[in-house]
Length: 533
Image (cartoon, rainbow, N blue to C red; front, side, top):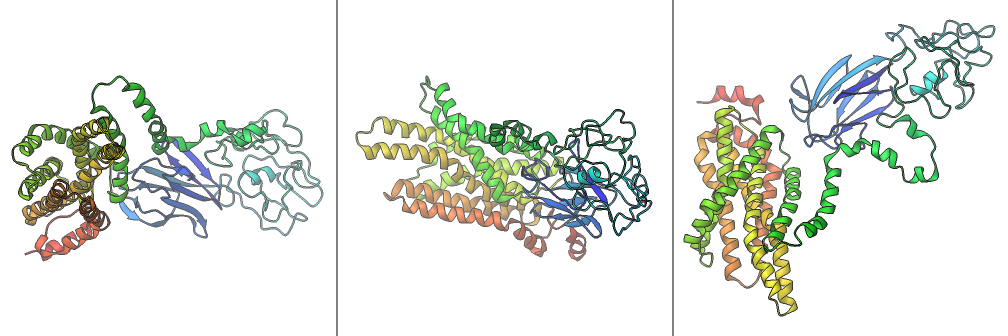
């Protein structure tokens, strides 16, 4: 039987046969891979008849030699990437624990009990113990077996000792002579291994029997943490919390500033004289939460350095374009109390959000010769929409605060406060929903040049029409239920694309009317190109 060694991020973890090793983003896993593209419960490895077997258990894929795989047997050494061919890399290796092919090349005899057994091999590094008559070369195997997951069975054919019993080999055996390279006497009842403590195991980092690194009893949890502590330490284990790998996950660290920021805002802006300050503070506070939500819904195949650079460029472009172009067009031509005027506003603002996404997609195609998944551009559209909403809300939240300050009745104050909350919490989200739809069509247009112009026009026209209806209804009707209906339609449209973006891409890829290159269905590219006119 073989142990499994997993190497990730400079750490080596070793697991005994029989263990179930879970890999993923969640801190509950045995191997924690803190990357947003990796599934919370990405995969698990288990010991089967054929050896260690990897089995995907999350939505994100696993790549072996650049090819997606769902299940495979682990050989002597295997390198895998999670989520994408360039994703986080893990090295899996099997190492012999005992039996044929082990470090000492020894074989365990299938026994029928202790009496009469001869030539039962010790683990590598053990000194043979003298045995009573009829028991030749029986090893002192108990603590070795305990550390490697076999405390209940012992060696084949050899009865296991009771936990905590003096480890002097098997009944009647003489004390062992120690381990190679380990001088000195052992603690009472523990033969030949300085530092061993009954009930606690070996100290962290202690050398193994043949001088190698120790195999941790519970990967990621120092063995000292298994000691029985005081009442306080047991119920409030601060020390173990500080060593927990879950702190490396960004989501837990984000909770701290998000809980403290409102109080920090009060302190920092207590002397502010600008009524736009609260709107800016809370819009920037909420926008990252919406972005995480959009990422979770869209699930783009990759968010790496390139995508971060694209998002930063889109944010800068959108802020500049709004102040130079969008506001001037709205002031000159946009009259939302008429439908034609509202339509001008709709196309003006949706173009402002779609344009940086289109420019970014063209630059990636021309400079890097790369076509990204339309879901990536859908996400980038939401980035542009969130940016637009954050900039826009500064004007409206100022009006809402003035309304609250000038209110002479409770209902007027309530309306002002709720208007402020709507702009801060929902304005960016609303613009992001419309811009996300545009972003998806931008991605499709870049991938399918034969229908590029119709796809771009359709992608901007759909959200622009919804935008115009929303603004016209807000300025014309006294009831807000019409706005609720328009927003519901917008949400259903956006969520529909988050659900079916990949399937739409596959259908378009097979349609002769859209024939062109695609990153989603590369395995069909050659036969389809052969069939192209």
